[in-house]
Length: 409
Image 1: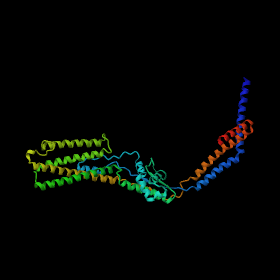
Image 2: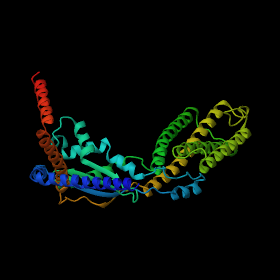
Image 3: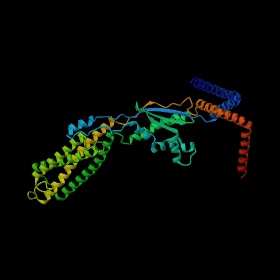
Image 4: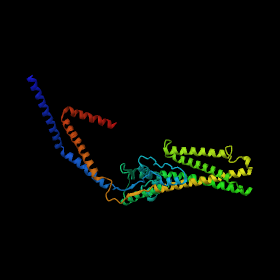
């Protein structure tokens, strides 16, 4: 047992000595090839330094903006609702996870890119034949736009050879973004205003047509007056139908940003059903039939036609008035929640270059050259030792012979 223990200790000692010898061998190789290692390392660093100073310097100018903050209430519309008897339209935001991403996407849009290309004549500057190539280079290589996830602030950076032009282009992107947002409905209030504006145009045209038909009918048949009770029924039915039409328009608007489970949407639907029920009762009192205001037996045919035209005229008058109130409310909300883009830091001509990063390039080249020199040093040492061994020398000669033969073929 003692003999086995002594043998084990001797083996460990021998292995330890061999490891020390191997480490010493490595150190000897490094010292022996130190000139090669230093030359390759310094050569890589110097060549990279020369290249970095020859490269054209690129400057980066940056501007920071605060995107519009969406509102969560619609005070103006609520006030007009109480005045006009029209329920409030739910004015929740559009539900964007990161509102800044919307404006970053707009900054990178083709519309803004083309405006920047025209303002700075980038097709000539970038020496491109097609606008599409200049646009691609501008958006992918020159422009950097991103949103800070914590603060929501948008950074717009532009890289260019000329520091002043880089600053001017960065500020120009903000200007064009403002111009673009003026013509787009990017908020819920803007969408409502745009929708009511279209509905109001259609209603106005229908109202003008109803007025012309009424005037033409009176000129053709002579003036005709109806009694107070009949006029009250006509005006009541016209008002209810106008309120129903306005409510349906309101529901169409709400469907763009609210689901069927939304409490405001459900309340509006209940109110619409109530108005329809009230209209049905009022029409039933006026007479039978789906489109009869007054029983035809009580009034001659001309009088019935007059009542129908009067009803249509009152309907479009009331509807136009209701839509005008909602349109004005949407305009007030849009002015309050307007897409006001605030500039936090205006871009100024940078003093330091952004590219190339000379220090970083030289450090990377130095480390790369150093590790490459180590590989070359150990390979040279291996080749030198192998060439002294007759068997390895013969293998090298055979390798050279086959390599030369292949090259000749």
